[in-house]
Length: 185
Length: 185
Image 1 (cartoon, rainbow over the protein chains, first blue to last red):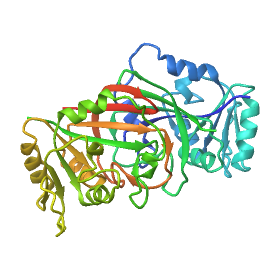
Image 2 (image 1 turned 90 degrees about the horizontal axis):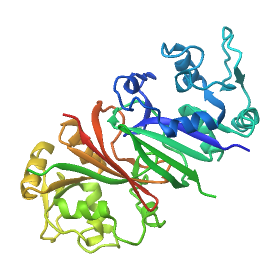
Image 3 (image 1 turned 90 degrees about the vertical axis):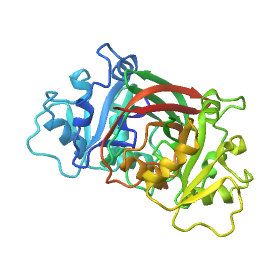
Image 4 (image 1 turned 60 degrees about the vertical axis):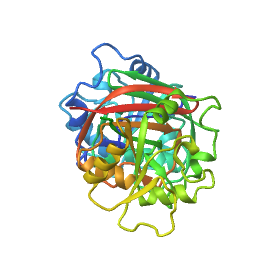
């Protein structure tokens, strides 16, 4: 059985996007070196499915930097699930499925589709729902050296509960700190 | 001239304390190894003065884990400045001075007292004021593998502006990631 992994690039103040889902802060600056990053290759190789929320899905669709999928700039392909009660009528991408049940059901469905590989969870809203239901096994943060000042926090609004992790690995590639944490049993 | 350094232990979701300034999350768990930590020794050695806000000052005073100063568990001593318009009547500690002017004046005064060493800035409110006035040179985060879910954010409430840094160093000691960033010129 694969793990459920949160993987996101975050600013020093914990934002994954600007106030209106702007992602240009990631692309505006050359934070990563041109050569392949082992930690990113590992995630691409070990990811079997992706579960995201409607917000991140729309950001991916609008992105001019990818074709059907924004996941890893098109370097990954596989089953993608979007948790939403408002599935769009016009998405003909074969690999995207829309789920409207509970977060636990969505994770279970997506994890089965991952066929033993990891399930990658993207998007602040879905991440928060997973944390509330204790569904996250690991977190891989790509910490980018910029303060955004405002935006969408990876871990959502205050009001959550305390959850303990252990530090698995700490590394640097270019300007980015790669920080991996595992849920404490 | 010394630098102005923000140094704080933060949770994965960016909190330096619980909703009521609780610091027990830091002490409840053995995040750091027993042996001396080079990165912490460096900060102690290179710090010439501390500037803090009234909130952090009160937490330090109440702490049973130190005597007059909570800075580094009593391993550091030197001039401490508290930015407040409500100086307490009953503090007889010789090393603590209360400042009520602007943040820029407070940083200037404290930096002069540091005599060429670094000025350490503590406390969410003072940190945010310093960032707003572009007074921070470096940030040293001690990232602790726990999600607090709620509390006092190191970088304050949303509404700040974007500030770029560069990554100076990324290291691990025990369960803690030591992450140092320098303001981009």
